[in-house]
Structure formats: structure tokens, C-alpha cells
Image (cartoon, rainbow, N blue to C red; front, side, top):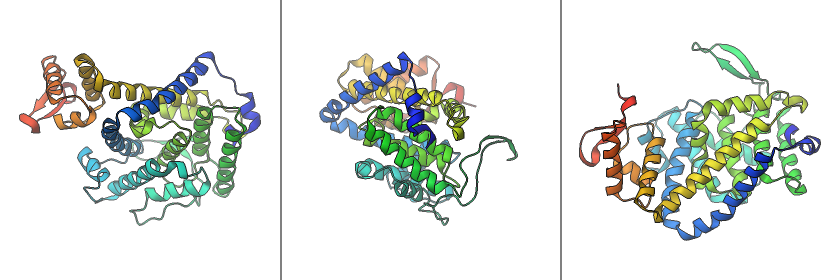
Amino acid sequence: MHSLDPAFLGALTFRPDQVATLRRLGEFRGRQALHTRQRPEVLEVLRQVASVESVESSNRLEGITATHARIEGLVRHDATPRDRSEQEIAGYRDALQLLHEAAGEMPFTPNVVLQLHGMLSRYQPAEGGLWKSADNEIVDKDTRGRTVRVRFKPVSAVATPQAMTDLTRAYHAALTAGRHDPLVLVPLAVLDLLCVHPFTDGNGRTARLVTLQLLYRSGYEVARYISLERLFEEVKDRYYATLEASSQGWHGGRHDPHPWLDLFWGVLIAAYKEFEERVGAVDGGRGRKSAQVRAAIDRRRLPFRTADLERDCPGVGRDTIRKVLRSLRDEGVLVSEGRGPAARWRRVDEVG
């Protein structure tokens, strides 16, 4: 495909700061094994939290929502889906679990992409895992659902099967050639997948699953413990803007992938920094643990309980969490609803 064409790759140049970013990510990867060997019990808690956040954020990016409590229940298999949104959420849960368990045995092929897409709709009457049968467009719509602007025209339906074959072959050829870092090839493959837009629905969620698959197979496993989907959602406007910017001219191989590459690498850097902070906080002093609790509160958008922060902050005692909550209440940042362990906390600026 266009971003992975040998001529296009050969013409790519990188700024000094981009080279430094790739070097830094390689260093993070090198330290990754040390953390996973030393603190397995902490990593299991982080993995559980990340799974819920990933399922919630990846679906919410596409307008698929449910309450946080319902999503937690679905991810932990304590609940069964009861409407279309929850069916889609459960499908993403299953695909994510499969990647966590078996990404190393799942090569990047058209059939595997179809398999991942099929899992997204496994609880719905409509069949998934099929290439689109009609041409589609990436558009902006107004509040009444009318198209106001066409952002991008993907590959036609008839050309999609061959395009996906070309994409996966080009990725493996570039990876085998060894002239480019996998962290260059992975986001380029994801960009091409989104430009092909091979499905009638579920392209964004499938692309995020493929992102995890390719990162895991390249040895970058931070997404097991820190949700990349959450981090992409936190920069939602930039996420869509950079994809649009980097897709312009794609059909002719004249596009600029750097806006997307910069965002992708920035999210990965943020994930590794958060990972090391949260794992390192187990051995840190009280000040560091308090900072970890404050960071966890910053990530929370809905009313939360003390128990939610305990899951988010493995290794941090309940007394420390309560002290931070009281401090933020006294600072006028948080307000509590109720008393005791069942009390829910929310930001003052969200009340009303």
C-alpha cells in the first residue's frame, strides 16, 4: 500500500526530534521486561484497569456508550449485553482479550483482520468479518445527520480485497527488509488500513485492535497495562485531525504521514511514562503515591468511589487515597455525594 511502498519509504526523512523519540521508545521497551519480572501482582491490577478503559474509550470514540459500571461488568464477564451498544462493547472485549493472549501467534494477514472485525459484531444479528460491499466515505455530518463535508474517499469496495492483501504483504516486506524501525512501519500500516476503510462499519475499532496486534508482535507491550485507546480519546480532536491531514494525497502516494506519526509516537511515549510512574509508585514515597492518586483522579470523567481509585492505584493504601480526596475537597476541586465507602466523588465543575 502507498505508505509502505518501497519508494515512498525510501523518500521518508525524519527530524532530529523524531529520531530522538524513536530512540526513547526503544529505551522504554528495554526497561519493560524489568518491570514485568519484578512486579507481576501490580501488573495484573493494571491490566484489569487498562482492559476496562480500552473497551470504554475505543467504543466511545465511535459514539458507542454505556455506563462505566456496565462496562466494568461486561469486561469482567459479570454481566451480559442487553442492547446493541453493549453487544458491540462485549465484542471489543473479546477481541482485546484474544490479542492479549495470542497476538504473538496471529500474523498480520487479511484473514486475521477479518477475524478481529468479526469479533466486534459476534453478539449482533448482522454478520461481521466481511469486506465492505459498497463504496463508503469518511464525512462530517451536522446535528440532523446530513453530510456537510467529505473528508476522504477510501478505496472502492471492489478493490478492497486486493488492497488489504497488498497492505499486509507490503508491511511484511518492509519489516523483513529491516531498513525502517517497526515503530515507523506500524503507524504507517494503520494509516493505510484506515485509508482503505475496508468495512462498512467498525473501521476505527478494528484499526485500534490492529495497532495493538502489531505493537505486541514488535515487542512493545505497554498497551497491556496502560490503555492506548484512552490516551487517543484524550486527544480525540487531534487524533481525527492528524489522520485527516496525513490522508490527503494518499491515493497518489503524495501524502505527508508525519502529523499522524508524531501523534502516534506521542501517545506511546505518554503510555510508557504513565506505566513507569504507576509501577514505580509502588516503591515510591508518600509524595509520589499522592501524585499517582491525583493523576488517577484526573483520568476519571464520571463520579467515582474510593474503590475505583484503589483499582487504579495498585500499591497505594486507602489512607493515602482518602487523604488526597480530602485535600482536593478542601481545595474546592472535588465534592462528595454521600458518606463512607459508598460515597461518590466528582469534580466541582461537573456539578450542575
